[in-house]
Length: 313
Ligand code: GDP
Ligand code: MG
Image 1 (cartoon, rainbow, N blue to C red):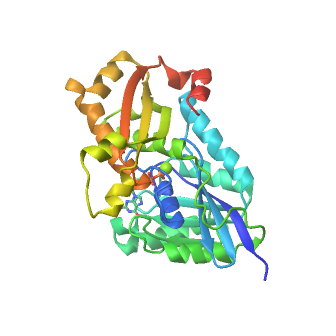
Image 2 (image 1 turned 90 degrees about the vertical axis):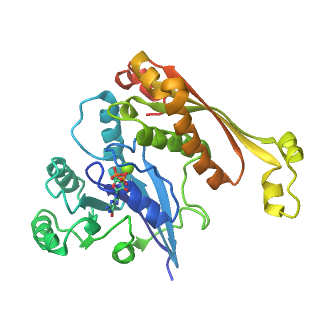
């Protein structure tokens, strides 16, 4: 039997749950998620392995009208992704079928002209009766291969979505080995987790003015630590004490005032960001993590194309 595969782009307005569905389908947290729009800045790849098939999903930054250079770079990245893929997965949210970005997205799908499924997400947020008019309305806008109501957060409807996508797979290579879930290097993931915690712990424009880069990430022997506190009879604790993960990261902001807010009184804010990030990094790597965060002002980096590139956008 032929192996089946496809590249699938997840597209939609900001905040509808694109990153959440990617994480759910891949089975691990690859893309950071926050209640604030425009959290995702780069394309993130997540692989779903099935029996005799493989689906390679690309999470894209939301498509929307652009004002800043950073946003333009994000939308350009989303549009470029559409050219690389075989199947489109458009996502909207049940409570916001009139999002202002939707007409632009529908126009884009027509231009790209590829097979497209529509997922209506967040069905946990309202009564089922909202669905029918939305399905009717969108059914007229594009010949979608399927329209699937689901909840990416809870998982309802996600299996059905995968089955529907499977029906559209064509014979193709197994692009990635069976144990691989993403092409994203650990260092990038670490920077993203720190960025996610900035979204959680700060308000207003600050998350959008922040970028994270890593200066150092290395495993070091943790002799001192393990000798200080020997834990007998607990092999897992001992194993995890042989090494620590040392991470030094910079948070770049645009203005001095933002730096003050991000650091907070007595370092309160940056400390909270550091603790939240460290907890999640320790879970993922199974090692004690020493995380050093440094806040730096990079004047107006979101408006400077050279700085945007240097910061990874
Ligand atoms: P993206 O901008 O499209 O990538 O959206 P995210 O995946 O970052 O999700 C945006 C917000 O919606 C986050 O707070 C998610 O937890 C939330 N969310 C995603 N899927 C669902 C869902 O099915 N139900 C509910 N209630 N919230 C969801
Ligand atoms: Mg996202």
